[in-house]
Image (tube, rainbow, N blue to C red; front, side, top):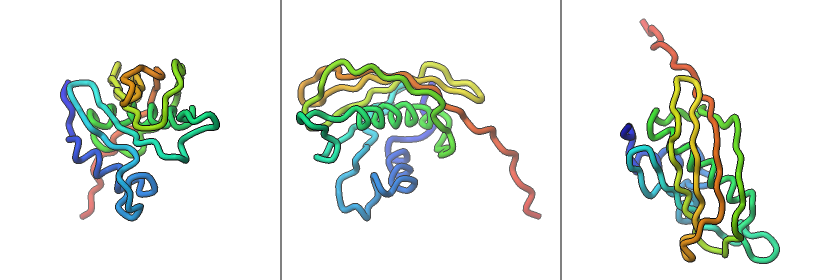
Length: 152
């Protein structure tokens, strides 16, 4: 199954729908950036900042969970279109290693796409070390398609 939207369209969607993370008014590079779509996979880059670190100088668990959630969500949206109300119903994560400060790559894979539910999994990688730091799986509820409204 091939994506129905492009990397550029997904990044524009993130900037428009989540300006606090990726909008131009932040005057910062995007926090979450879709970097690749291929078949049933998507890769998202998070440039972790100081506020993403926990004591001890490692990227925090909540930050890694956010990246996993966004990566799984993006791989689903890549295949159904930018339906913002597609929501997480379940997320499970295993933390495998402490990632050093810097960029993380979330590589998400679409496992099942139904009419109402979608399932994806995601590996989180330390970009600089090239090591797997966490693995997550998630389920999303897809809102029903509404018939076009008659505006006449």
